Image 1 (tube, rainbow, N blue to C red):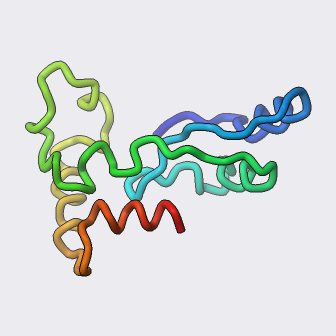
Image 2 (cartoon, one colour):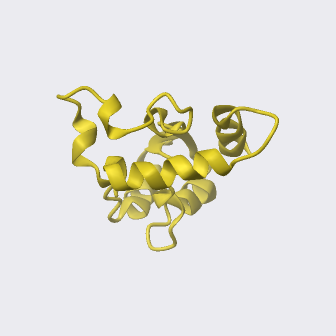
Image 3 (cartoon, rainbow, N blue to C red):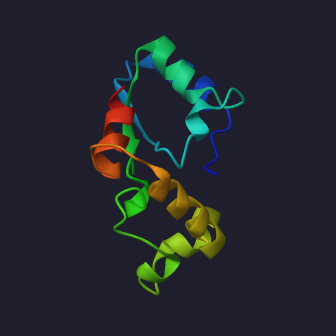
Length: 116
């Protein structure tokens, strides 16, 4: 999980000094931290009229099935330090992808969700 300690306070103070038009945050179906009430980043940005540019909306390739297991990453890839990319989590997330039934790809559905 990314650390968002006091981000809402920082955004509020910074907005008083100069307009903030956008922030870039990780946001995807696998990374919903900015929605948590304890963090309140999404709500704060909405209140202040700050746009959110989503970082990794396709879950680093997991939601498009380009990355199907932790073995698909290069040996020196930094993904190995994040628990969401562990072998156990991959099997859970892969099963979510397989149960999805629609007339579009998982990537298309994910991007539509981000835009909604």
